[in-house]
Length: 378
Image 1 (cartoon, one colour):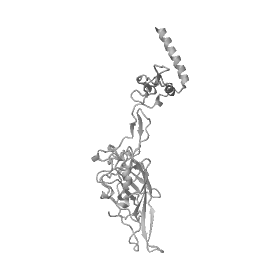
Image 2 (cartoon, rainbow, N blue to C red):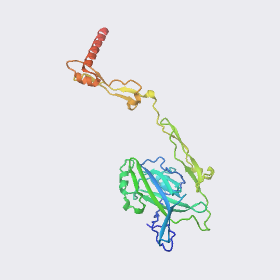
Image 3 (cartoon, one colour):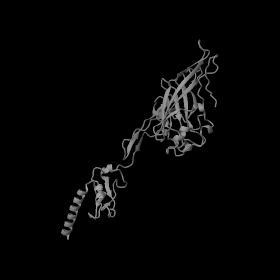
Image 4 (cartoon, rainbow, N blue to C red):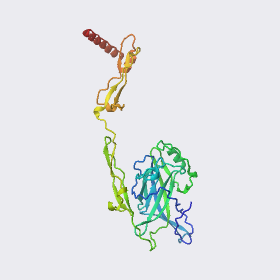
């Protein structure tokens, strides 16, 4: 692995003490989508991962008190792009992977005055021969405000944490086939320390050190023709929980310098929809929730009790009893073939929550009523 980013140094300081971040290949899946956003997940499911990157420039020089000193400062307004695969090892907007037009897990941010950017994404999956990794690109502006200085690298993660992540059923491919040491591109200096867990997600912090930067280019800097692309926001929450709601998002044309421009400057053929339907599963009306009962069981000779299933349903499936709370719930047990000398009064009392005396009294009344009705009908 070779660092090709050259540091401007003093004659007395031939080697800077702060290591310049190693450059790595951008790989085959880089696309300049121009998606200015912090949350790049869209509809991708995975364990949450928050990335905090800070960009510094390094300058080595001699001072009055030291033969060689080193200073570094945060870079403001640097453009940081990241892109990586989803939990299944697939990249978005790739014809070879059948994801054209799906621009998830891609985006860029610009550093603040402290040189910081933050991205919300998911822990990346893996594909054969590669360990878990995230690509990033750093672009710096010249004096004309054009992003011309550009280099790429990759972030890696501790194998132990990756193994824990891949135990989650979300990562259906299971454990990767290439640990860090078997990935030919892996660089130990590019491991991002993480904190967190599979339940709450992970946070990672990484400092990127660049050579001394003044923002000055030679006078022969060629004029750069701006390019244009669609900037797409995340979908809004669905307007309905069921029954077919809608979601909206902003789709606007921006230039390579990040300015919003007229939509006519972007390719209309690549413009994505700004409105879609969501949560189209039908809502069940309150009236469709009802108690349904099963057949009575055989009468128990010991308890003189018969039982049946009583469940709240929506017409097709059993649901929580809470949905039927507005109506009387039928009994799931009843007394049958009562005989004071044979039936277990204690068990009956436990079922009905009453004393044996009360049960006996009520059974006597119940038997009399049944007898009277039988005589009247006969």
